[in-house]
Length: 99
Image (tube, rainbow, N blue to C red; front, side, top):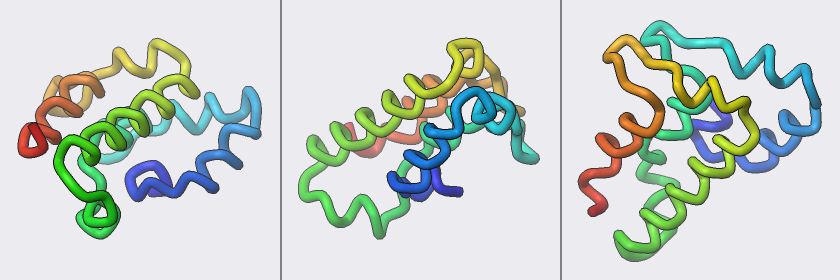
């Protein structure tokens, strides 16, 4: 939830958990989306609306996705969800309307 809704402070606390965060990172939802998939989803309109222009919105979204990816173990970014999408593939699909 914190990753999907771009709650930086909560994600920062999660990062400080050290190795324990890897256990949480492997959790998946009903669609087999892990935390990297959650970061790949388009931010809620209430969050995106605070940034003017599609280019800046895309920059912000890409920065968030990369930050979350850097926190996670590399193999998590290779996992596929129920639609057989990696987090990067999901990011591309979700952000088409910003391009």
